[in-house]
Image 1 (cartoon, rainbow, N blue to C red):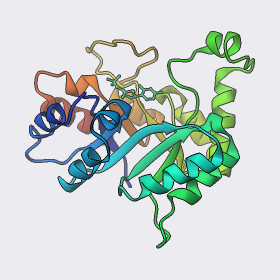
Image 2 (image 1 turned 180 degrees about the horizontal axis):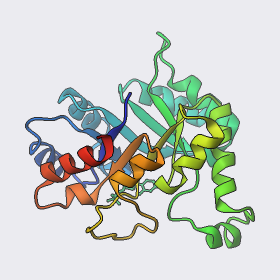
Image 3 (image 1 turned 30 degrees about the vertical axis):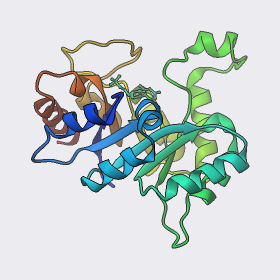
Image 4 (image 1 turned 135 degrees about the vertical axis):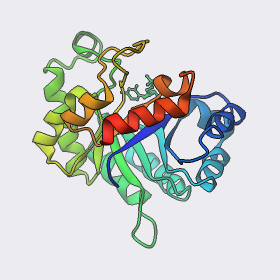
Length: 232
Ligand code: C5P
């Protein structure tokens, strides 16, 4: 799968989601379905978006004991999504079991990526609340290496960390990066942001873009600009 822009469809209902996707008459963007929409509408929303021809990143960030995550991944593998994810903080055994659970009888499986540290966590919170005293960058490197050792395909990280993850894990290890804004756009609650063009230069493989597209006056034009700037 080549570089692509993934639209974060952070909508509360199927109705809002389809009203948004209906605007795209010429292209079929890669979409991210997160917890809000999945918990509201259930697995059927995934089947319906897939049936419309979109690739899907199912962003449910699993984190539990290995057996539970492995069985949940086996269920998700039947939804035929393209990417799913979990928290690297669950440990290497959990991630290995997740890969096994996700693998279908024919040997195929969706890509599996790990959240390293959430972009809402900073150095201070990591030290004071989680009692992790290493520099954040080192923690991201170690979690990415753990994910790679477990057989995962990549990580979700800040675009600003994409280059160091590639240095540590190799160029083929995927970096999927949220926190994208146009140079003249509102930042909102994101702490560390960069533009689509800069994300391309740093080496992100996929950018996840929500409000700069979903909240734009002309979402299709915003998506096209993002794609042109990122993929070139
Ligand atoms: O609207 P915005 O472009 O900020 O949306 C970013 C998307 O990426 C949201 O769905 C958010 O939950 C997700 N995300 C993130 N940071 C992470 C992991 C996921 O912003 N570390």
